[in-house]
Length: 105
Image (tube, rainbow, N blue to C red):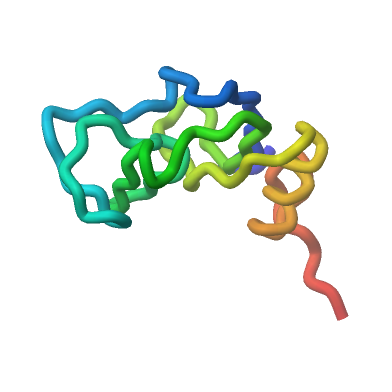
């Protein structure tokens, strides 16, 4: 079993579960002050307010370490769970269990 494993979730448009709510911060895209940010589009050190980057419905994927907080940034949205999983495996060059793919010729 690999340390990092693919994870796929389904998200509703503007799902409050994925909002980053802060007292006030500056959006890295439009540079305005805001209190709500897109938690799916905001990576480490990158905040995008919901006005610039609304939370879109669909399937999102990432690699995550079960039982730990280690995870890559979310990618998506995709139309299906299968597409989200396939894109995650392509991006991180792993199989559906998170194992590295053998090097090609």
